[in-house]
Image 1 (cartoon, one colour):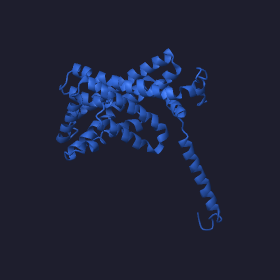
Image 2 (cartoon, one colour):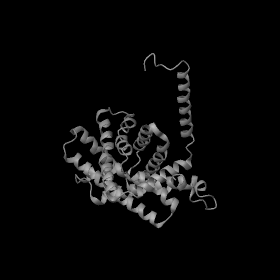
Image 3 (tube, helix red, strand yellow):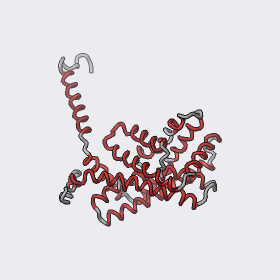
Image 4 (cartoon, one colour):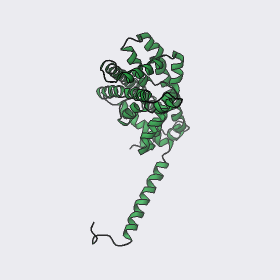
Amino acid sequence: MTVQERPPEGQDAEVRDVVEDARHKSVEQAAKLSPRLIHEVIRYDGEEELDRPFRSLFWSGIAAGVLISFSVIGKGVFRTYLPETDWRPLVENFGYSFGFLLVILGRMQLFTENTIVTVLPVVAQRTFDCLRRLTRLWLIVLVANVIGCFIAATALAYGNMMPPELAAEVREISVKAMAMPAGEQLARGIPAGILIAALVWMLPQSGASSFWVILLFTWLIGAAGFTHIIAGSVEMAYLAVQASIGPWEALAGFFLPVLIGNIVGGTAIFAFLAWAQVRDEIVGPDGEGGNRASSLHD
C-alpha cells in the first residue's frame, strides 16, 4: 500500500478492533469446548474410522508400526550420547516421543488410539453391527502395526542402519523392556492406555499446542516405565528377529499382557469414564434423546 493509499487516520484502529474482537471470540469458543462437544468430536471421528476400507486401514497401520520405531531409536540416541547420570532417564525419554509425534500428527492408524476413538460410537449405539465393525478395525490395525514393527526391527537389526554404539543401546533398551514379568507388563500397560486415551481426548481442543501435548504425555509414558503395545512391539521384534527371545516368551511374556493392559486402561477405564460424564447430556437420564448426539453434525 502506498502513502497515498493509506486509509484515513482512525480506520487502522477500527481494523485492529475488529481483529482483536475476532481473536477474543475465538478464544472464548475454544474455552467453551465442553466435555459433551469433545466427546462428539471424537465419536464422530471414530464413526468415520469404523467405515474406512480395509486397504486404507492396513497400509496406514503398517506405516504407523514402521514409524513408531523412531521412539526406540530416539531413546537410544539420547542414551548413546548423554553421560550416565541420575537425570539421564528424564532426558532420554524425550526421544521416546519421536515416533508418537510422527504417527499421531501424521494421522496414521495406531492401535492404542483406537481404544477410545472407535469405542465411543460402540458405547453410544450399543449395536451388534457397531461392535462387529470395531472388532474388524482393531484386528486390522493391530496386525498391521505389528507387521510394521517387524519390518522396522528387521531393517534395524540387519540393515546396517545404525552405528554400533547406537545399535548396542537399542538392544539394551529392548532387553530391559522384555525382562519384566508378565504381571508387571500388564499392570504397567494400564496407565499407558489411560494416558494415550487422555491424549486423544485433549487433542480436539489443543490446536497449535498438539505437538506439546503429544510430547509430554508420551514422555511421561516412557519416563514412568509404562508399557505400550506398539512401541514395545518394536523392542520385542528387535530381539525376536535375532532369535534372542522365542515366540512363547514374546507372546505370553510381553504381547498379550501389555495388550490387555492398554485395552483396560484406554477402553474399560478412560473411554467408559468419558462416556459416563456426558451420558445424561447426550441420552438423557431417562434414556431418551439419543438423537442429540448425531444432531451436532447435521
